[in-house]
Length: 421
Image (cartoon, rainbow, N blue to C red):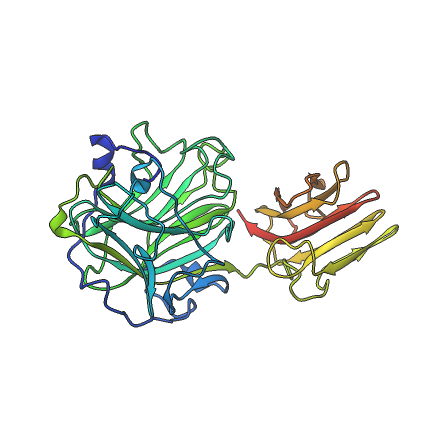
């Protein structure tokens, strides 16, 4: 738990975890570049063997400061985890093989806090909705230490202030304990004191690197340690944002904190604290939807119907990558038929869309699936995520998904997705 300043005793019990002494995290560790499609343990979920596209990665093989095209420093703030954050390479730096996040009690002129710590985040640089995250890391134990690998919503108050808009803790560790925590926060599972009922404590290899990960889909968040499923948080039937605020893009955070909140006071003899991160990789599952970001530089397998306008792939106004779709002029529609669906099954189709000027409109929609066509309007002038769900009919195994612009103006679309709920 990150956003609360203090944890009451009850929440400390909810979150307690343990860990034994690691070798010095300043020592370089060899990279483990195993493919995500390697055979997994029999106890892992079969979805681990799905096909995935790498969409974000940092191997931390340089020296000195981090890649500023991907990361920014986490700013010092009032919550316990952010109380001593310090934006210098003394506390966040690459050593040639790893990113090293550090915490110590050094005296820094003009910065009169008793401790200094390091953290970085991808906010404003990279965020994503649904996918797989893998982070290979190790950390040193110590009284008062609190390393973490976690995620927060890019729009922090989409459903209200913390915890209403959600938090995903891929890994947290405190003090000298021999296990770590993987936790969900939202309005339904987080108590007034900051503790969560949606949490799992798991043993891990205390003498080496471990791989911490999640698989996040529209229906669940699965937590893994060394590719073994440990805990699943499921979206409830008919869920509202109170139980499932996890339908918005989230960004990544890596930090070494401590000395306040959950871990308690620091024993200075245990300093410095360090977390070494070997790599971080984010994957998106290869969808049944073809060419979702138009990076193929062609429309196919999308088709288009242009009675009064035109549809084209363009290299401007993209949300990610280098390309997007543009609908210009009068009435035009972009469509794709997706086959191989299961009857009586609920799916979600969505993407990011915008219009060029206020008062214009377009829509995302689905049809020909065994029910009435449904759509959602696009009216914002900056990219906004829109999605809709539908359930196939008793004998239907396909659907037509579309982006439609009915009148004059210009609309753009990018990063479409299609998933089973």
